[in-house]
Length: 478
Image 1 (cartoon, rainbow, N blue to C red):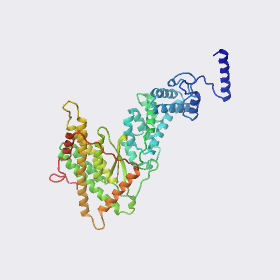
Image 2 (spheres, one colour):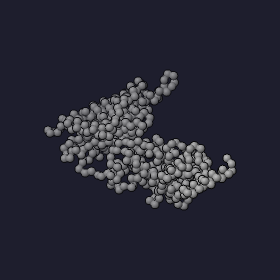
Image 3 (cartoon, rainbow, N blue to C red):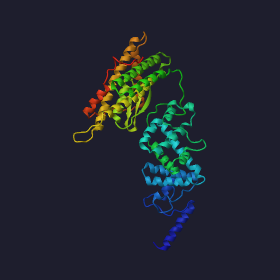
Image 4 (cartoon, rainbow, N blue to C red):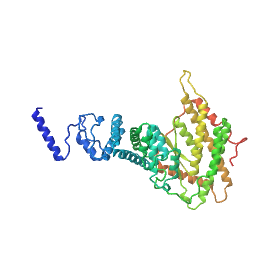
């Protein structure tokens, strides 16, 4: 192209830019990402900034126009978009630009506040989509590094602090306490600024962690909402206490003895005593609820219990067996790492308490059985232990149901005229089924994978069937 033609074209470009009130563009990307598309994104408030040089996008050499707040929002949006697309080098460049903005006088306030608000809003959105603190933490430990997990815990604390304590269900606060999450930063700063000052990675690391955590939260699927969201919870009155604390204390004491003994027969006796005690308490609670006015208020609840790797399938099976023995139903969300247990509150408490102890005992027995190898020398320990735990789950379920049936029969014999325990239990079972249908309208039933190691299966059954549940040496649960 001749020099005169170049000058005429440049003059026309300057004239068009002047008429539009914009700075003239010097070049567009060869990839088709022209200045027009990038300005259109920026006009939405969070789009990428315009480029003024023919350079790779990852260089990010141009500074977006507008206030520091606008610039920070644009770089953050670009970082979030690139993180979602797996463009690691672009994410690093955008985070570097945010870090540079934070070095300015205004940026020291704007950037940490923006990051805090963005992540806390993402946590709030996850609440509305059915997630709670423990479940959120459990899943994100599979997907995020420790730095990102830390900022999520801080954001959960910050989000719940937005609401009056009386409007947050006690379970939410208890879950935060179990995670050892609390407001460790001073009220006059953000957790982003505080963590940047405390962590070895500084603000750069916190920016990167916040971006990764925000994208992970946005990518979570919807799950059933199990209870009132923070800000909407109200304490209910007129309902009997769901679980007698004294009963629960005795159950835990029995299970602690089962966990501490090295004799399987003795452990089995303690487990049976704990199940019997909880079964009787559940029956008493059911009959009490049936006799009170406002009976319709006695409705099923649900809990999510984490299932950790490895051997997820037999662990979920064990939980299902314990739940069935306590008149509950289970739904396993394998990819999300938890099982939802549906039932009445005393039964849910029994399931969670018993499962936690039995899982510990089952894993201890499986690992105590040692490793296994094929004749070729190849390890078959995994298949052995998986079969062991599956067999253990089946047999323990059978034995727990025996205890529950015995407690039910005994309670039926003691019932007074006008009290029909069988009818009450059938009605409660129907309510549980209805609640499962409400929470999971598209529930799919799939069979568990069959165990493949015969020795493991037989060893697991022996471990679960080592002692009689009743007879000489039984522990009184009364």
